[in-house]
Image 1 (tube, rainbow, N blue to C red):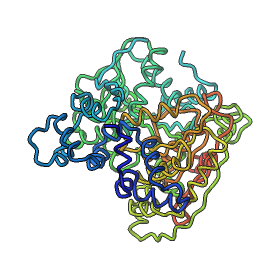
Image 2 (cartoon, rainbow, N blue to C red; image 1 turned 180 degrees about the vertical axis):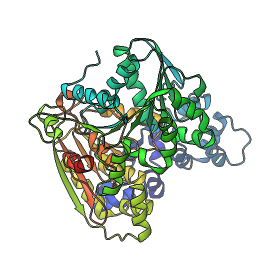
Image 3 (cartoon, helix red, strand yellow; image 1 turned 45 degrees about the vertical axis):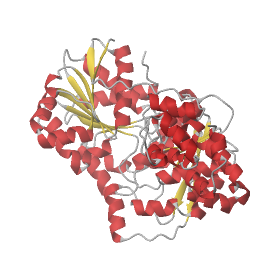
Image 4 (cartoon, one colour; image 1 turned 135 degrees about the horizontal axis):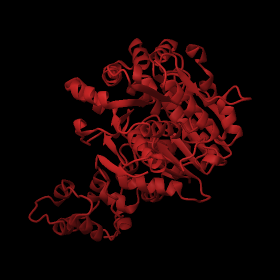
Length: 535
């Protein structure tokens, strides 16, 4: 059974199910010629690949309904479903796992090759490592200042370096120096997401392999990984905040034991340290250990754009001890980083849009407490067709000047919708969200990173703010409203790598500013705020 022949049977309803009702409606508004059945069939294959059409259950079920009765009976027989009264229902209820005989059988039936299986992920909690991890001059100066402040009471300091300036690499040098000064000790690295945890663990292995003086252990402790904390005596524990928080609320003693053995605690994205949820955890790790030192890392000067009281609390938490980049002849370190080509020279533009949405008192409180916009408001924005048309026009304009573009969508469905329309408009655009299979995600990212002169666009929601390395990205459109400077900075950071960091001479950031909601300007501008709080 040829899958293209099967798709040719799809009526308007089936095509709408395969492509998405919102996508068809938006295409009709832009150009009705893009909604002919023949064009939609080609678009579906471009968006999903033929193999994905039979491997993704929701899409496969639609195709099964297109089979004639004798074809459905034949496929049911091939799949080992004998004696079923309704072959269609039996086939739709079938679970097909990757690498199984059933997968090969259905691929053979539809005359399709199977994509390669993804590599298995190593889930071990401990990696043994043995011992030129250089720093740029501005990083070396920052590292030296951090080490000096950690030697003196109150032994806590915030390292504040802008996005793209090498904050993590600088911190790893500090950690390696610290570990070398002990015969045996424990360092604890805390981060709020699994991507940030794995990023830190991999970076430390690279650093210690160059700078270490002994063999020690890297302990991975987040997600589904397990670890006996009593057995940790020497090395670095990279832990998820939520993982340790669950333990401390049930067994504070074991965290206290870990804190007693720890001489340095690092908090990645240090604004989290003042969240009431995690204060108990940090107190148990640090407060009761008189020799413990605390290092906070941040690329942003505070937690929000305008909540000075919260940012003052962050300053007080680190005893107003802050190390930032100090460059002679420059008032703002971002200007230095641009001049030296560590960061791209970036143009920041705002795309203003008035949605007419009204925020309730409850919505305002939610935004204040979480720094995020309520889901129902995001959904309304994502479905706003005039807003979407403005976004599509802007992306098409960026595509005339840039080869690699990332769009940060408003919601998961919004990422899918914009990618669909851009594909229909002739651009190579794909969606990556939490719903994207690991196979498709790997394929899309590999294609995006591949060196070519074609324009590639990734429409993403929620998964590429951290842990994604594609330095040739030179443009980003931020359509995801947020009050969090950290999240905004991470989105900007995907597109502003300079030539010395494998990136570009210039970059372009377009932020959709919904006039009824908070929006931001450039990283350089955000970096200059709140200096008076730390004086």
